[in-house]
Image (cartoon, rainbow, N blue to C red; front, side):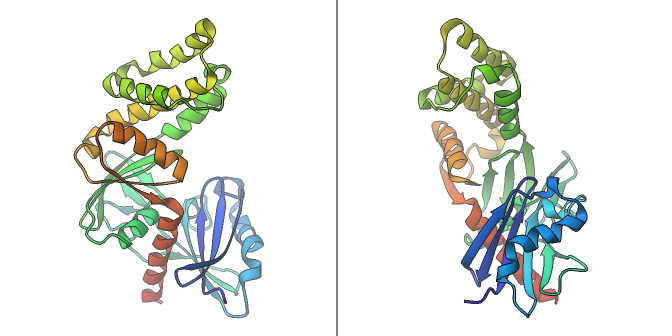
Length: 297
């Protein structure tokens, strides 16, 4: 089958591409050539390295989302202000591309007060809503920077970003806790840490050092410490987002492992949670972006 169009998820650290025929994936590839590693003139070569074998004589549409549309990206795709549809405008055309491709980048979303931005997640939200007409509720997108998004009548009404994933990486890899945290997991320890952080989020800084002290004084298992660290940080996030998820229809879009961790934490609080695959939502959202592009051409 011939590649009809190409879907691209271009983040800060990674580049992922899919050869598409309609909504069907024909092939896929990825590299570590994310936005942070590229100069402006290096974006097209990085993309062509992955997709060259999918191209023919006729130009193929390339639909991209993520940090590729940042100011430091391939082309700046301005933010749309909420409240807004996840994809309110047609993607921005990248000028001067290889004649075998016509590249477009989806814009992100911004919130002026409190100030917040997203790039890439808006496409996943669009893909999620495309398969769930008239869905209203709250979407959690866990990751390095977790997003909590209020959706109503097909629009993103408001959202907040939490640096929970990045804090976990920094604390476990670069703080004094790196000596006390290692691979492993303890579900009961995680659940207890979530509950503790939810009830006493102001104690977070002290509880964190307690992980180091428990290692020094009691030789606490390092996998247990990792589960507790995750539980503390996610619990603090859930305490801050309680107005978002309490009593709301709730969905999680993310990679399977982190989605299940968040779903477990929320279910402990009695929340009903639907989970959706991040890649499937991204592809469905980029398909929606492609339809917007074709309407304006």
